[in-house]
Length: 124
Image (cartoon, rainbow, N blue to C red; front, side):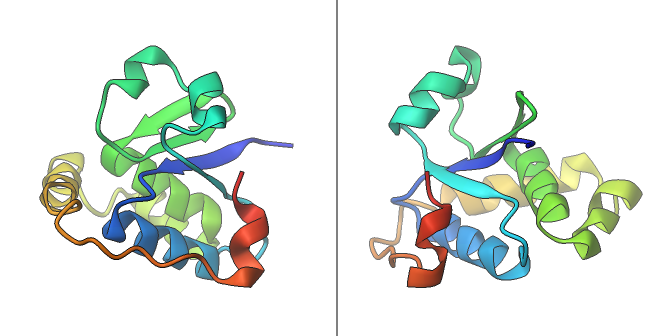
């Protein structure tokens, strides 16, 4: 089994919305989720990746950060989004600008809803 785990900031509304979106489009439940700074995160994420303020996607022991993580998560969750990866529709420079913009605003909202009951078993 391939490990495909998205590590996210559970205190971030943008992150929670993204994770909820991924759960809706990932009909097969391939992508799993875990909180940044949780026990699994401490055990499997490299020290260099722990130093960055980013969503982290671990796939087959390789870490993806920032917009690369977003693109990989989407492409693994649903074949439609593989076009993003294959075609590289958005150059990395623009993806990083968009990611940085949203990341800069992520701590400004206090409310973070819990995932729906049918998705809770996908959290590690």
